[in-house]
Image (cartoon, rainbow, N blue to C red; front, side):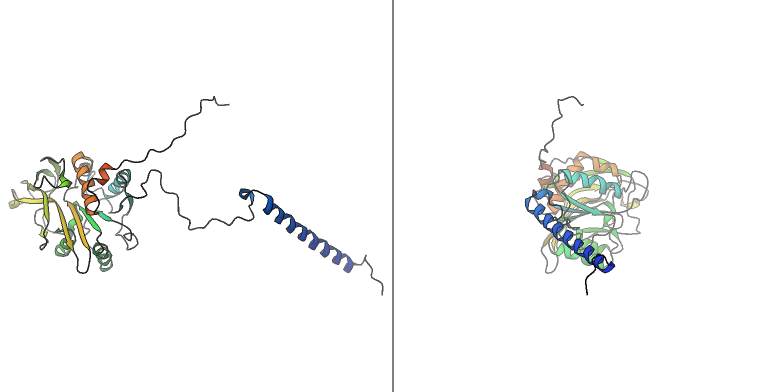
Length: 315
């Protein structure tokens, strides 16, 4: 039987052979392009970038800086008071400018948050209210030598005896145990301590606590105290001398030596901008992280290269 090349079957066969031929020569051409084109133009050979590629480091961040996690909370009280979210925003910037690597949140840190942190800075109302899981996370952090910095009513909670084991002193929530806004006059007790370098006896308008639960064996090292002013809420505690700034060094069972630094004020948010207080806080944070006390203050950021403006007129 003779083959009819004009039949429908033959036509289909011819089209199939033609397609196979085009595909073959197309692949040959692609291979030649991949061999002879510059690497930047081998688009077919480039793999897609990994979805988990590390993001570029923020401009100006010190890659070798101490790692600080800020635990803040939602704002409470009146305008200008207890502004925890503003602290997270402002001090993330301040600490980064002073050479730290900063992270933070408005919720309790997780074990992943603290995995590489040197210091946990807490500025949050009633931070002493900790779940069992939150306790275990913070205890594990302290056991490996992590530093704690507690500001103002972060000291407050339902179990001051427990929280005092973390930071040296604590305040029981619900007790009338505050001056409200009042002149708080500092008396520096250890002028030789490097954290207090340059600090004088001075007065700020803020709030102080008086009925404190203190840790023992070891106890706190008092850096500054204040005589409780005679406000209505202070009552009979007027004139009592109570520590307001202190350090605490201790070791949890089967743990590494750990440090805590406490500044009891911060009721009035404007006091964070006070020069003496800001310098003290930078030193206290560095000390808690077992870094040289002046390391944040003395940090000099690198000079970033900037492009020179063109002298040619725009066309």
